[in-house]
Picture 1 (cartoon, helix red, strand yellow):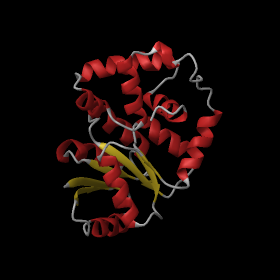
Picture 2 (cartoon, rainbow, N blue to C red):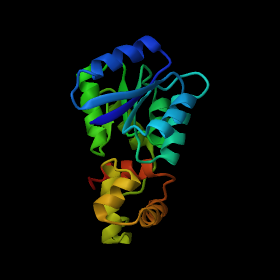
Picture 3 (tube, one colour):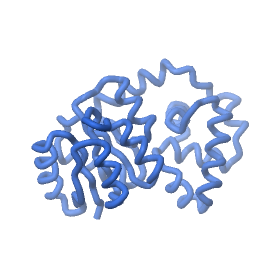
Picture 4 (cartoon, rainbow, N blue to C red):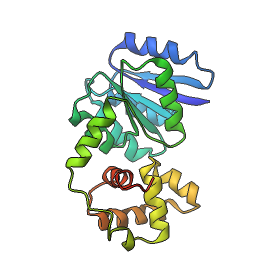
Length: 212
C-alpha cells in the first residue's frame, strides 16, 4: 500500500482527489494539508510514502515545503500537482527535491500511475512539462560527455546513472549496498567533477548524455 499526503489550499480539490485516489486498491490517503507549514508537520508525524504538493499556498508555499521535507526526510517523495506550468515553478520544485511535476488537469488514473512510478524511485513529468524542462536544460552550460566520464570511478558512474533515474540517496544506498554517508560523499565528488551546484543538474546531465 502506497501512503499519500495531499497538500493543497483548495479543500474541495483535495477532497475530490482523495475520493478518486481512494478507488485505487494500492493507494491510501493518510492525511491532508492546506498549506506548506502543515505539510511539513504532517510529513513528520505521518511519514507518507508520497506527497502530492501544490505550489502556491498560504503561510508556506509548495517549493519551500518540498525543500524542507526533502532535507529532513529524503525517503519521502514529492509529486507536484498544480495549475501552474511556468518554467520557474518547474525548475524550483525539481531543485527543491520534487521527483515529479503534473498539472491538475491530469486525469486521476494518470495521477495514480505517476504515484506508482515515484514509489519505484523514478521521476514523472507531465507531457507539457517535459519539453519545458528539456528546453531549459539545453540552455544550461552543462559540461559535454567527452572527457568528463573518464574522471569517474565505476562506482560513481553507477551512482550517476541512478541519480539520472530519479533515485534518492537512500535508494542508491540500498541498491548498491552502501552506507548513506558514502553515497553522499560520492555525489559531492560527482557534483564537483561536473561543475554543477546540485543533484538535479547532475541528474539532468546524466539524462542528457545517455547515462540512464
